[in-house]
Image (tube, rainbow, N blue to C red; front, side, top):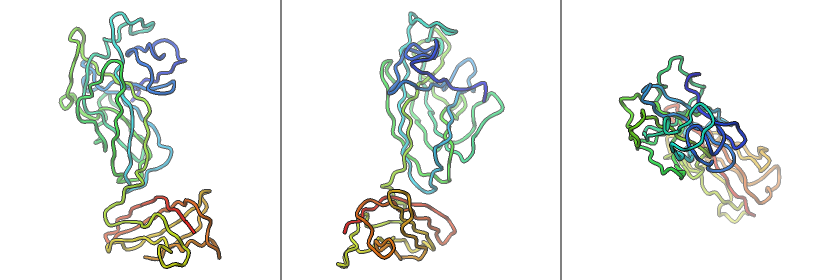
Length: 286
């Protein structure tokens, strides 16, 4: 949506988008020297919202849990704040709070040819009204289970005016709710194990003593097939099996591999034809 692009601020930019004296409020970045901002709601055009969209570095693994972390700020607004550009007074565009801060993951980039909001259902959402002090950042940690191999993330308000709650704090102007965003990260939760799909143990000792000599998947009865790959620290595959309950004996070629941490990845299919992926780390000790 060309009419609803978000804003990018840096410490080296020109006026209006230079940190900390931005056209949308006085605020320092949460870390580093850059941040972004977007308009969640404006009373001038109630169903007109801004969005931030990015392509992820790699596709998400279907069926896995991911943790999203980000920091949000409002900035300090004042009639006397010296701005050099088209908004001399940041109160004009940043005088309220709102809810429905949404995070929508998709396999393809999304857009809208009209001026209306993006009508998608976000997988993650901050449902309460986001109220933040004028000089502080608030950090959120959210999570979800990926039900597809998503590669794009879009942030914004995916609801209409009638579905959005607004909390104004200055009635002298039309209500606009603007937020700054910084330090957005997305990481797979390696401690998550879908029900019925468990890999154990995560430490094994292939020394022939009959205890933890193999790294073997422990599977639920409804798992029909799987492919298990184990990689070393350089990303080289050292073991592969597509036979149920056949695990790694620790050998690379004819010899037991060196002590250390290895990465495993399992692609499985249940008796309903549904596929999933699970991965993690294991430690080999002689």
